[in-house]
Image (cartoon, rainbow, N blue to C red; front, top):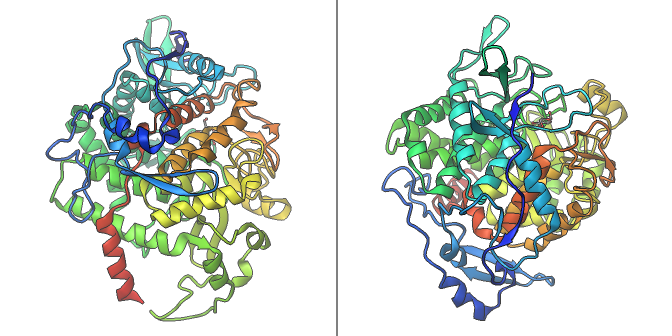
Length: 571
Ligand code: GLC
C-alpha cells in the first residue's frame, strides 16, 4: 500500500524583494543593509536564548562575523551584518517560493518546488512529511516511506519558504511514534529511539489511515538509526528559531522526547571516551561500511543536538543540563584533539612510537604508523585539514566524510581555524571531493580486498558507487551552509552550478557513481526527494544567508577558554 500523496501548489517563482545579494555588497551598501527592519525579538527569558555551555548565555543572533572572501582570497569582515537581516517567523502570503534578492532565479527552482510538493505525504488530511523517492520504475523497497533524515532538507526548505505547518506536524507525529513499544525479536529497544522512517497506510474498506514505523526492526541489517533522534532535536530548534514559536518546544511532550533521546546517550557505562559508540550503518550510511565505533557523522550530530537541547530544554541549572554541558565540553575537546588531521598531525602520526604506557603517552590510542594508508599522504594538502572518519583503539579511519565535517562546521564543533581549514581542503581537493557532481559522501572508495572485508562483499557498495565513494547531491545544502558560515560562498556557487548542469535533466537521482561522479548511480532512484530539497535549501541559503541561523551555531567563547585551560593542564 502506498502513502497518500497530494499533488498541490504551483511552483512559480516570484521576486519579492530586490537588492544586491549579501556577498556582492560593497562598503557603501553596508549601512543600507543594516537599515533593514530589525528582527522580531523572539528571545525568551529562559530556554530559548543561546547560552554558552558554562554560563548558558549565548546570543540569539545568527553569525555575527561573516567573512567575505573574493577570488584572490582577501577577506573582509562584515561585522553584525546578519544580525540586521535575520527575521524569524516570516510567512509568505502564498505558498509560492520566493527569492529575497536580485539573484536570477534558475528555472530549475520552480521544477524543484513542484517535485518537492509532489512528494508530500498526508496523514488524515494533514501534511506530515515527504516520501524518500517518487520513482516507481523499480522495486520500491522502503523508498516509499518518510525517512527522518531525508525529511530534514525538505523541512528546511519549507521553513525557509514560510511554511512551517508540515514541519510541526512531522515533529509531533514522529514524537508520537517514539512512545511506541519497539521490539526486535524478543528484545526491547530503548524508549528514546526515533524511527528511521514511517509510512502511512490507507485502509480503503474502513477508509482509515494508520502509520507504521521502522525503528531498525525491518531495515537492512536491523540497525536502529542513531541519527534520527539527533536530527529531530536539530529540527525542533530550526523550527523554533525560524518561526519564533517557542510553544512547540515547550510542550511537555517535546521536552520529554528530547530527554529520552539524550538519556540514551548520556547514561554512564564503560566508556572511556565522550564520543558515542555505534554499530555500523546507524546513520546516513545505513549499510555495513566500516563506520562502526565512533563515526564522525554521529559525533558531529550528537554535538549539535546537545547544543540545541541546551537551548530548548527548560532544565536550566538542573543536573541534566549540567550533564549536557559537561559532555559538550569533553566531546569538543576529544574531537578537536584526536579526530583532527592536518599535515602536521599526519606527520606526527607517521613518526608515532607504539606500546607507550601511562599518562605521558603521545600515541594515546596505540595507532600503528603502518596502518596509515598510502593515499592519505597525497590527499593531504599543505594547507587544510579535516576530521577523520573514526578513532578507536589502534584504529583510525582516515577517510573523509562530508556530512560529519559540514555538521562540525555548522555546530562549531570545529574551531574557526579548523572550519576554514576544512574549506581549504575542499578547495584544494576539488576534483576528488566534488568532481563533476557534488558531493562525495566519503573519500576514497574501498577497493578489492578491503571492499570484501569491510563491506562484506556488498554489491551495492562497490568502489566509487553509492556509500562507497559515490556522489550525493543532497550534500549540497550542507556544503552551502558551511560555505556561508566560513565566508566562502563562491565555493557553494561553483558546486551549485555543477548540480544545475545535470540534476534536473537526470531527474534528481539519489546518487552518482565514478571517481568524478560522472555517471548516474547504478541503482540510484530518480526523483529522490532530498536531492530536490537539498538543491532548494542551497539556493535559498545562498540568496538569503540569514537562513543559516536556523541550522548553525556560533563558536562558543566560554568553551574556548575552558579548552585552553584544560590543554595547559594536560600538556
Ligand atoms: C538510503 C540511504 C539513507 C536514506 C535512504 C532513503 O538507504 O543510505 O541514508 O535515508 O536511502 O533515502
